[in-house]
Length: 328
Ligand code: NDP
Ligand code: MG
Ligand code: MG
Image 1 (cartoon, rainbow, N blue to C red):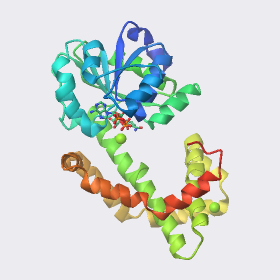
Image 2 (tube, rainbow, N blue to C red; image 1 turned 45 degrees about the vertical axis):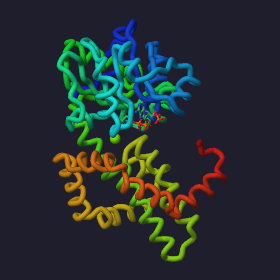
Image 3 (cartoon, rainbow, N blue to C red; image 1 turned 30 degrees about the vertical axis):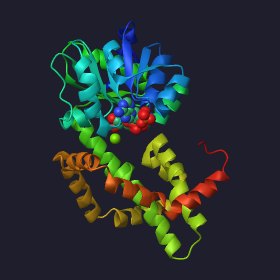
Image 4 (cartoon, protein in one colour; image 1 turned 90 degrees about the vertical axis):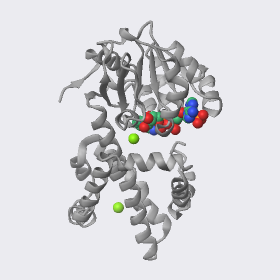
């Protein structure tokens, strides 16, 4: 596996070029600001509304996606995945021209063929492996979030060099850039967020909290043990791996952890993970998510509401309000 770093990438390639960041949300605002601070010319393609106002306040030139498509050399798709195909058909395709680059931060729409671009444009992936707000925060602190890079179409013969230059612009070459494919990025990203990062962790936290509260312990104590401390533990793992966590925690916690882990993540859990992966690979998850959106997101919105009402959220909110050092 080859990793690319600062000296491998040439930011000069982007001088004289215009990058249109389409969407000014979580990834959009951070990638746009990082690129601008790296000396790249950035415009924002965004429908009117809150995000557009924010981009304007942040000093960017904001226009419609269609206008941005006519001007820009590189179009970075940072719209919600489920809206990208429609915006592409209506506002991008009519103005797309030879020599342009379509860039994505998640391979969903290309891999699952919701967007099929013409042959004469470059189609690349630059996917920072971290939440948008960290992409900005870490860059401001002088670092970068690692990124994945992939090439779907190389019409210019220079698609890779441009994509690599872009990763440098957002700070990723400080941390390391890995080459992947749209297929690998899409499938592993969906799996990671479902099995571990978002689905797995959230339900582990809730189940631990509920177990303690149901047994009669104070919700505040349950919150600190099963939710608040997750960050402290994850920070140790992030800094120095599982061994650093084990070094820092008590031997009691380490012994208990070795015994308990396999009882929580059982053969059944692993089977469920394989099932999730298989649904992702076969396109079952993608189809469900596309249909859910076409139907107006009834089950998504119901689950969102149900989770927002979980007692852990209420306890957490009031405890956090007393910890002034936790940023908004
Ligand atoms: P967000 O939902 O945070 O932001 C989307 C932006 O697109 C908003 O500014 C929204 O503005 C705008 N938008 C929505 N619909 C339209 C439209 N029809 N026309 C123009 N603008 C529109 O998205 P994310 O940043 O989370 O995701 C963007 C991409 O990055 C996705 O492909 C995602 O998979 C990928 N990604 C995201 C990560 C993350 O940290 N969130 C991590 C890695 C990859 P408005 O206010 O008007 O709705
Ligand atoms: Mg994702
Ligand atoms: Mg403890």
